[in-house]
Each structure stands twice: as C-alpha cells, then as structure tokens.
Amino acid sequence: MELHRDKNYTEVTQEDGSIYMFSYSTLVAFRSASGERTVSVNHWSNTTGRHLNAIDGGSKEAHAKRVPHATLLKIAHSAKAATPF
Image 1 (tube, rainbow, N blue to C red):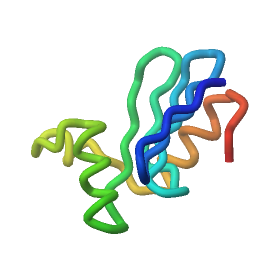
Image 2: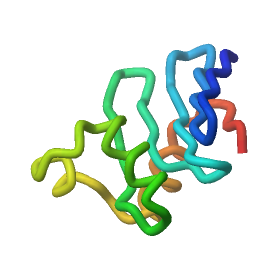
Image 3: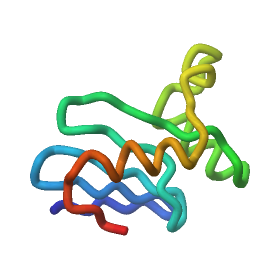
C-alpha cells in the first residue's frame, strides 16, 4: 500500500493498483485496478469541490458522470481490494 498526502487530500494506492481518493477523511473517488474511475458528486465543501475537479478535470462532461456518494461507496467496496476505511 502506498500513501500520498497533500494538505486535505489523500490517495491510497493498493497493491492491486486500485486507488482510493479522499478529501479530508471522506472517500470521494475510486480508480479500479483496471483503470475505471468513479467520482462522487460534491455534497461537501468548496475545497472538496476543488479536489473533485482536480481528479476528473471538472468539465461539464465530467460533472455529468459523477455518481451519488452511496454509489461510489458500493463500487469501491465491491472492488474486493483491501479497503483503507
């Protein structure tokens, strides 16, 4: 497992290559080992919004692909990787 922190943003890379992305302590995005990225809609602060935009580019198309937070959690959990949360 590899950990990368930058102020209020953290990425946890698992041995299988999947990446869990956190704003503060909240999981906000997940990239599977196969490279498929899932990003949550922003239910939180402006800072988290900036983190999400940095993850997916912040375009209208990217915003349209964002999923409810509960959906993100289900996808990340079903990845069957050892979760850091």
